[in-house]
Amino acid sequence: MNFIQPSIDPVIFSISFLEVRWYSLAYIFGLLIGLYMMKRLNNLIRDNLISNSLIDSFFIWAVFGIIIGGRIGYVFFYQTNSVIENPIFIFEIWKGGMSFHGGLIGIIVSMILFSKVYKIKFYYLSDLVSTVAPLGLFLGRITNFINTELIGRPTEFYISVVYPSIDNIPRHPSQLYEAVFEGLLLFVILNFYFFKTKDLNNYGFISGLFLSLYSIFRFFIEFLREPDSQIGLYFNFISMGQILSIPMFIFGTYLIFYYAKKRKN
Image 1 (cartoon, rainbow, N blue to C red):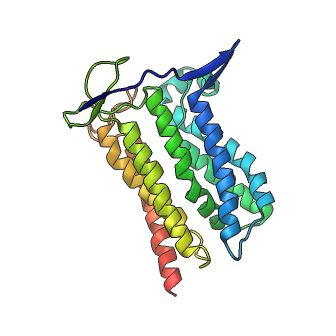
Image 2 (cartoon, rainbow, N blue to C red):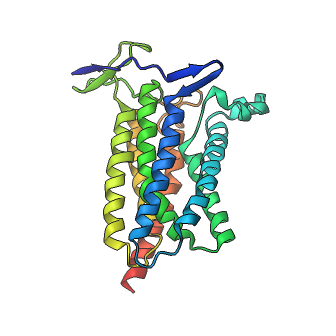
């Protein structure tokens, strides 16, 4: 059963030189929904360690961390040659290009600095962020599908998608796989553990769960996704996204076992 990708213009509307795109809208809504949910979850914790006004203050730190980290990560992880040939490329944001792993590093740096400035527990904040982050990932992957980017590999699987603007080859809808696993499923799992452990002062466990599960989902779905054309596969087997997911998994697993052991003690 082949589905035809709907023909949706990546640009919602434009006024003169200003274009409003689905991708930018996904970022905006993802951040605003995340802010709202972080405050709601924070209110549910009996001994919460941060005020909602501080969460509001963190919002701008998160925005800069995600955007700056996402852009720097993209150009250095995926466009190294372009940066070497033209260092100004890093600032050419209008040409597109953001990296999840770069955005992750960016927001971790933001959380570390914010925690030190306002003297709050880092892992309390990171658990709140981790619990709501999958919703933003879900929106991002849906817009990847709309934009016909990060497409899947050819397949004979009975459920596939055809991108008329690229070719007529049935492909894995890898963006939708990621939206379901890295977005919806991860959101359900993390929220289940949040409500199960929210009053146990076991901060860091959910952050570890986010890192490890995301990296697992990303690693295996990458096998169904076309490798980035500019760098291809390393050793004809593994992609840059998979390589970057390995340290995520290792550190996430460490946090899970560390805080699980701490909880027992």
